[in-house]
Length: 173
Image 1 (cartoon, rainbow, N blue to C red):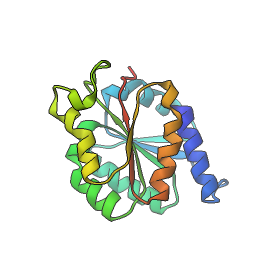
Image 2 (cartoon, rainbow, N blue to C red):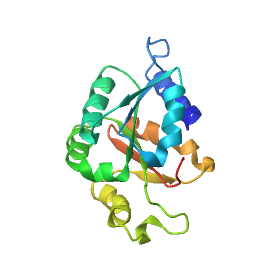
Image 3 (cartoon, helix red, strand yellow):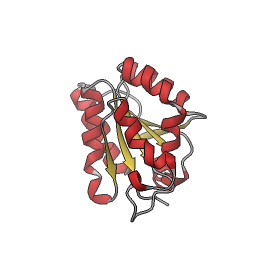
Image 4 (tube, helix red, strand yellow):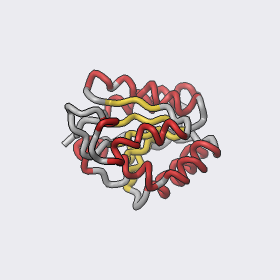
């Protein structure tokens, strides 16, 4: 995941002609997520990516907007419950405000043999339909074969000036 984010951040800099911009290659804003724990630990260890742990998803959206306005490359790492918790901010800042917002959303409780749409838990069942309601493009990141989606959806968030979501189906720890 770390290398895939590096590629996405580097490509973002190149598209914006900001390769020599001082500071980190990119920023990761996270709200504690046990589902993506090992990925977050690896990101914390990266010397070219800065990780900020936020108290809430709403706070992460606001920081994302500020960093974006400052020309920085940013990704949000949250749990699917955070999509529900911050739906008004997602709508107001990312959708209506047209702020590029790339998410890696952990599907906590995801069972490998059960499609999220058939999950017992309502938050798992309704996460993708909720994103559909707001017209947010999304895909599932289920294995290392899907890591190329990180660059694709990161770029998509920038091109459409809005949100794009990768749902991390398989636990990283």
